[in-house]
Image (cartoon, rainbow, N blue to C red; front, side, top):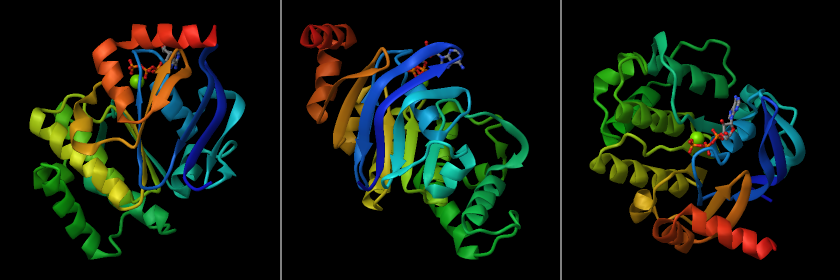
Length: 255
Ligand SMILES: Nc1ncnc2c1ncn2[C@@H]1O[C@H](COP(=O)(O)OP(=O)(O)OP(=O)(O)O)[C@@H](O)[C@H]1O
Ligand SMILES: [Mg+2]
């Protein structure tokens, strides 16, 4: 299969079981949205896909284009084409946003010199995308996330997703902290990622983004399991009925 596939994933972190048999697929050109209550394992799922070491895979597999990623480091997974925008990106004093992006591009091109701009058109593209995302030019020259507003952090994470040009983009609550125009803009830009043929795994609490990007699939993660999966109608059900209802329906189905 092409794209990202998670099969029967069981994961433990700090002794606690956080995922209990998760199956999901993200195909190229589609947005697969993951919803679910606080603490249900959404960020854990994203971190595990990226290979963060504290998340121990007890069973199951994670595949990109049919090839298992287990055993690969986060950096190796990034080189294979995975990118994750964090729910709460850290500040990196002393390193400019533009420097990070140029280093990431060079790395993907296999260069050992991470600072030299090899292709000036990339810088032009950076400025153009920043503008489209509603970021001012000066933000590229500022230290990463230092003093960035909540919305600026989210927008700059998305800017990196475009510049790094991965195959699969994992976005952990990209709408949190965004103003109304930002939600629309960021949603439209996310749809732009799939128009470029990338697959997007979109973690979000609210269906407000779906007004602008109409997800191809929506899955609800509850207590480390996918309790419900389907099309946009699933998001509508979440908004209308809440998670307690979906959990009880799931339990009833399982008997
Ligand atoms: N490093 C860790 N050490 C201990 N517990 C952890 C760790 N990471 C996650 N957990 C626990 O695992 C559970 C799932 O957390 P996770 O961050 O995946 O939830 P989430 O679905 O992303 O929630 P939210 O909607 O609040 O972001 C929580 O109970 C959390 O406290
Ligand atoms: Mg989370």
